Picture 1 (cartoon, protein in one colour):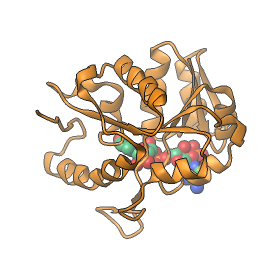
Picture 2 (cartoon, rainbow, N blue to C red; picture 1 turned 90 degrees about the vertical axis):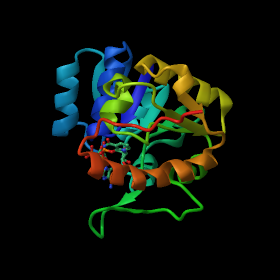
Picture 3 (cartoon, rainbow, N blue to C red; picture 1 turned 135 degrees about the vertical axis):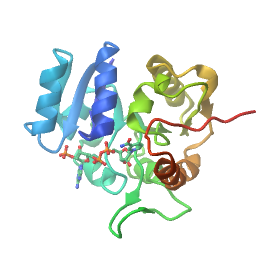
Picture 4 (cartoon, rainbow, N blue to C red; picture 1 turned 90 degrees about the horizontal axis):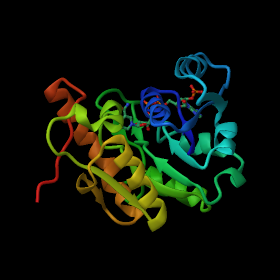
Length: 216
Ligand SMILES: NC(=O)c1ccc[n+]([C@@H]2O[C@H](COP(=O)([O-])OP(=O)(O)OC[C@H]3O[C@@H](n4cnc5c(N)ncnc54)[C@H](OP(=O)(O)O)[C@@H]3O)[C@@H](O)[C@H]2O)c1
C-alpha cells in the first residue's frame, strides 16, 4: 500500500520504518521535504521510503497517519489539498498535550472534545480513525516489546476505515483479540485523556516499554 506518515518525530520514524519493513511504499511528510530528519530517514530505508512535504506525501498516499502534535495537527492538515484527504483513511495517533506550563503536561482540548474529532470536523471527507495514541511509539510498531497480552484501541465513525486500521495493526503484530473497538470517534475523548495517566505510569516505572491490558 502507499502510505503517508505525516510527522518526522519519534512516532513518525517508528511507524514509517515499520511500514517500509512490512513492504509498503511510505512517504514521510514534513514541513520541509529537504529537512535533515526526513532526508536521513528516506536515505536509510531504501527505495520504498520517500521524503516529502506533508502535502506531497498525502497526494501520493492511499492511507495517511497523523503523527504530529495534537496542537499543530490542524495547521499541518491545512497545508494539504482537501482532494488528497477525500475518502482516505486517516489514522490519528496524536495527543493534544500542552507543555506550555511545564511538566507534567496539560490536555489542550476541552474534556467534551478531542483532537480526532476536531480533525474530522475540519476534514469531513477524511475517514478518521483514532488508534495507537495510548502507548509509546516503539510499542505501537512492535507490540512484542511488552510481555503478555496487552491492548490497543480503535475508534472511528467509518466501519470500513476502522476495519482497514485493524488489519494494519494486526500486520504490526497486534493479536486481533487485543485490538478493542471502542465505537465512534467520540471515544477519542477518553483515549486522549488517558495520556495524562500514561505520563504518571511512565514516571513511576522509568521505562517507555509498557502498556495496559484490558482483562475480562
Ligand atoms: N512519542 C511517543 O511515543 C508518542 C506516543 C503516543 C502518541 N504520541 C503522539 O504522536 C504525535 C507525534 O509525536 P512525536 O513525538 O513523534 O512528534 P512531535 O514532535 O509531536 O511532532 C513532530 C512533527 O510535528 C511537525 N510540526 C511541529 N510544529 C508544526 C507546525 N506548527 N505545523 C505543522 N507541523 C508541525 C513537525 O514538522 P517538521 O517535520 O517540519 O519538523 C514534525 O513532523 C504527538 O501528537 C504525540 O502526542 C507520541
